[in-house]
Amino acid sequence: MTIQDLVGTFSIIGSNQDDEKNSYKGELKLSLDANNRIIAKWMIDDTQEQFGTGFFKDNILVINFNYKGYDDKNFKGTVVYKCLNKDILEGFWSEELGDPNFLGMENCFRVKDSKTVLN
Image (cartoon, rainbow, N blue to C red; front, top):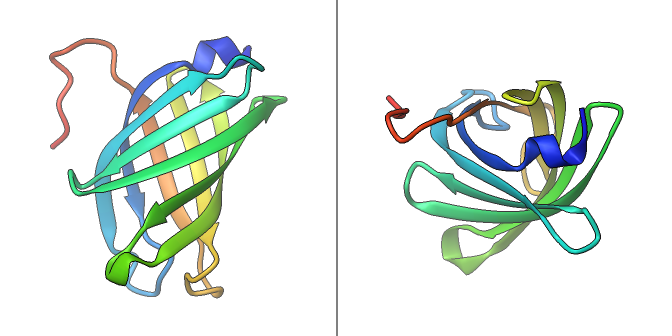
């Protein structure tokens, strides 16, 4: 698999970095910059945009991300995806202000046509 194989849009299902494991859904768009680095944009629960940049090696995708949260506070973190194939990514993540006793989890499934919907 190459980094170019990852470009596209994915539906995501995840759980937060906390004891309650609150779940979320959304969309992840992956593109490449001029240096073949990953550019990521998430839309979580239709309300929260997150942005990141990353790199790919040996079917592992690592992205450093950031977003504005409550009280306009900036949050930063890192997500690591195991690329099972070009259509399915299995990941875990942590952010600096999250509960250090837990990891967030996120699975991504490629959107193949406009009929794919999130439930």
